[in-house]
Length: 238
Image 1 (cartoon, rainbow, N blue to C red):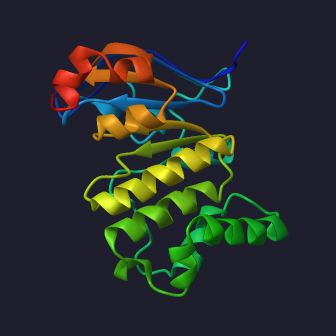
Image 2 (cartoon, rainbow, N blue to C red; image 1 turned 90 degrees about the vertical axis):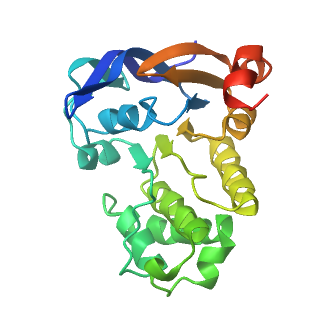
């Protein structure tokens, strides 16, 4: 039986007088790439922030590895193997690429393995190696997205949360980012992907959820959802 790594039940999140998430259920199993799609304002990013403790959950439960993590800070969750690449990337702009990668490994003390993982990130993202001493704030949006993903992977997460990794990128860079997402998944990292590019997200994922106005309105096998007329009409522009 497949192990459930992340389980959300009856989650409600409100802020600024708005109930952004209205009671959702969602599961991510070991080894899966699961995507959460939906239009702007659907509550996707709010859900991710609640999982990682950046926003408080008003109701419901959030379990990771069978234990409640509701109310825990994101710094504690990284130590437990749950890392997020936030919307907007959030790189340390006044630090070099290499310094950013080292910051991603701040929860680790195995220096020799950290050095190996830095080399591994440079193999996964050759462009970062070419610019390893460059300040991250001077890089393009696509390069910063690569760095944000590499920095998160430096913590050796068991579950990686990706919030809108393709936002604002050129079509060529979007293809590269999704190539990396599939590569990371193939390496055994479990991934929960929030993404507006529904077609690419469902093509990459094992399972998908559709979120609309704070509710999960559909879920299932990603490839079947890709061919569902409702999904195609609402999210694929058909």
